Length: 586
Ligand SMILES: Nc1ncnc2c1ncn2[C@@H]1O[C@H](COP(=O)(O)OP(=O)(O)OC[C@H]2O[C@@H]([n+]3cccc(C(=O)O)c3)[C@H](O)[C@@H]2O)[C@@H](O)[C@H]1O
Ligand SMILES: Nc1ncnc2c1ncn2[C@@H]1O[C@H](COP(=O)(O)OP(=O)(O)OP(=O)(O)O)[C@@H](O)[C@H]1O
Ligand SMILES: NC(=O)CC[C@H](N)C(=O)O
Image (cartoon, rainbow, N blue to C red):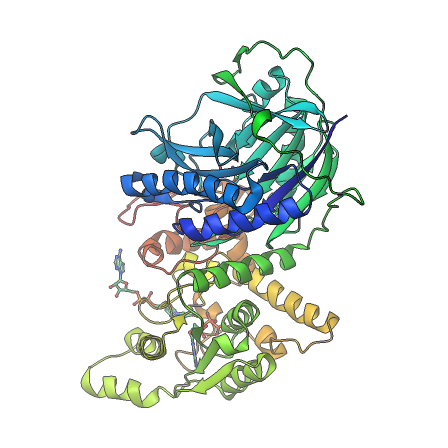
């Protein structure tokens, strides 16, 4: 069988940076050519970045994407790579009012084939029905490999997630290989879903599937890569590591086409009729000089455990949010508690200790251990540590405003917010806020107080997982012979906002293991009250939690963005009205 050396380029583009993304493609194509590849494939919308959201509606952006594609083809040719087919995703429009999520094959200095995404995801974080017109033509390219010809079908991301679509058409078109270009955001355990999914589609197509995904953070999403090659029989030939740039190069046996090409069939798939458009690019493809030496076997990268995977997602999500938005460093309040300690450790892993300023802001109610533990964290991680006592500032407010009870408690959090924002303005650092998913769910934070900040690494991390991550990160440090970053006492002490003497979170909230179990059902699982009771939860606690969650919608609507790691993150995944009198159970 002809052997195609394929390169899958798992890269990290930036939304809107057409020139920078084109440069990434040129670099990747060069590396692929140096590795002797005969075909290189980049992810979904690599040229524009993904998702581009309402940029799709700007005619100027569509035109810039089309122009960038043409220029990229010319530049690849000028780079001496014109004979190497390069497959990239970008934004196109045809006819002009129909925006298309498109894959193009560049060869010989121009785009030689295009495919418009057929299945558009319109659930969870995706709104592609709002943006794109679906394609109804399957594109099959024919190219020379090893003195024979092979047929290769193009597909884009969601096409893979639906049975009976382009992959069925690919089988009927008799292709030997299906390319799958992806912009598939990370969720915990999604890699466990992807592999069987790719295996099912490969079986459906009766052909090997080469799956390539983006990496990198884009606002609340983080892409984990996880590119792979799976045969029709379900064998996993190669798999890239998650969360890193990677060029996966692998020698792949692809069946040669019969001497007589099959007549172009009009194929009916169960969901939609798809025409097959065949493009023979043989004349433009240069035979690769031959790798010489050993065969390329990319190997199957080991999977990380859950905590390691989430940690990498949070580190990359934060690093890219900071870097892609033009910041180099961050500031956060260090309370000596677990949330700020974990955020600081993530930030140090993302940006290095010199990129993180931690500010202890003790009030009259702050315990000694809150200061000691914050200082200990700073010493362990090497971050830049400062102390800004707040009591005099709080007293100045109290001398001029008549406040009592909760208003005084929240004032402390607000003074801290003012200090962090002032330091951010003064020194140009992004403020990180530290509220975890459990707190965000029940509104346990002060508006314009501890919730101030530009980004929140823990936004989608329930409190119970915050402790798990802390323990995992410390253990990982011990394994590597390093100092564990998080003070043991921050992990062990009962959580407290320290806004009044002796205050504990459990004064206002159920224990976090009880709370998180209810939230997993209500928020992540969309369960109703009856279902939660049937699952064995205490009725009074369920009623209290559901009410808190419903009433906190207004806080979440103005909360900072943060990396999605779960199946349902607050934000685009869960859109509820703020003004809402419906209460589950009456
Ligand atoms: N639908 C709506 N749309 C717009 N705004 C709405 C609103 N409903 C209330 N509001 C406003 O929200 C305000 C109440 O919110 P807010 O001022 O935040 O105050 P609130 O939620 O009442 O109190 C903050 C709670 O968070 C706890 N906390 C604070 C700080 C840190 C931590 C921690 O452990 O991390 C916990 C604190 O102990 C207390 O239980 C009201 O004054 C009202 O103006
Ligand atoms: N004394 C303090 N000094 C500096 N920052 C503080 C202080 N107290 C609270 N903060 C900031 O406000 C956030 C909310 O913390 P708070 O102690 O009120 O509750 P928490 O949610 O249990 O957080 P943590 O586990 O970090 O203590 C903290 O993560 C921290 O960023
Ligand atoms: N970009 C896409 O089409 C992504 C949709 C797909 N279900 C995924 O998450 O991988």
